[in-house]
Amino acid sequence: MIKQAIIPLAGLGTRLLPLTSVFAKELLPINGKPGIEYILDECIEAGIKEVIFIISKKKIMIKNYFYNDNFYKKIIAKKKDSRIINEYKKILKYKKMIKFVYQNEPLGTGNAVLKAKKYIKDKYFLMLLPDDLIIKHNCSKSMIQIHNKYKSSVMASMSVNRKDVTRWGIYKLNKKIDKKNYFISDVIEKPSINKAPSNKAVIGRYILPKNIFSKLLKQKPGKSGEIHITDAIQSLIDENYKFIAHHFSGKYLDCGSMNGYIKSSLEISKI
Ligand code: UTP
Image 1 (cartoon, helix red, strand yellow):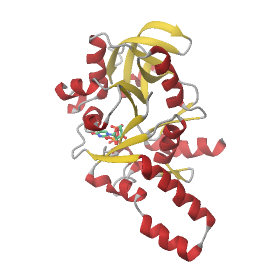
Image 2 (cartoon, helix red, strand yellow):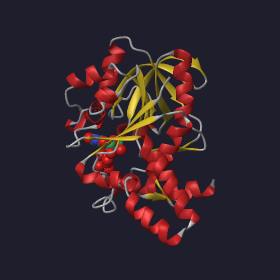
Image 3 (cartoon, helix red, strand yellow):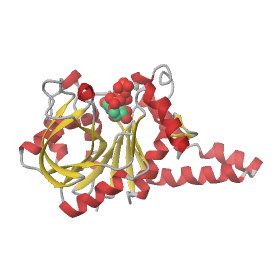
Image 4 (cartoon, rainbow, N blue to C red):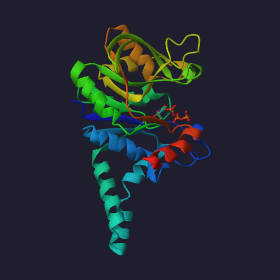
């Protein structure tokens, strides 16, 4: 069973400047609700019991958001407002399941994940990139079902425009399982258009084996000098670990870019 999730939140969010110069992008509202709460709700509905947030000192406001008890208690004592009481109850529910771990320097997603090494108990865990919202369908839940069936790693996937492959981790299909699921044979972080093995991109949901930590420990910096989770996944594939690309149902919203962030509120308000 997959019961733990890692969420890296220690990046700089430069694509959302100036919004992120003093504010954590994961707390930015998307249709009136902080982006990270959509991710937490997805985890809870998928049966996750513990979530490990990788934050940095610069993003301590994320922890403060969940630890503002005195403030809530004072306001609730004064106003007895049922909406505020319910919001506080929700925060308490989230807080119970979150553990905070620090990544002091943004050395890449792989390096962020490595910080959670000592807390992962089971053979597999879920990893979510909070910039990637998937609405109308619980992608993590479907991926966990596939993992339970095939006992292998799973990554969320979608087709992207050929000219955009340079923005993503792109993989090569190996064997079709069914209409939505494929075994993959290679994955490359942000390839050039010429080197891209397909137009199939990895989106920010992964079910990874605990063994990935030993790969990450040895991982040399890749593109832009960062330690990428994709490179560690390739090392596992080279050792015949099975990875399934899952073409998710639902709609993908890229909340890490300014255009995508603006559009995401509009899309969610339509549901
Ligand atoms: P991104 O590289 O897409 O986001 O990382 P970023 O670095 O925050 O933003 P830009 O590119 O400068 O605009 C994907 C996720 O991984 C986290 C980020 O916080 C984001 O949620 N991350 C990235 C880390 O936790 N640590 C890192 O070293 C890098």
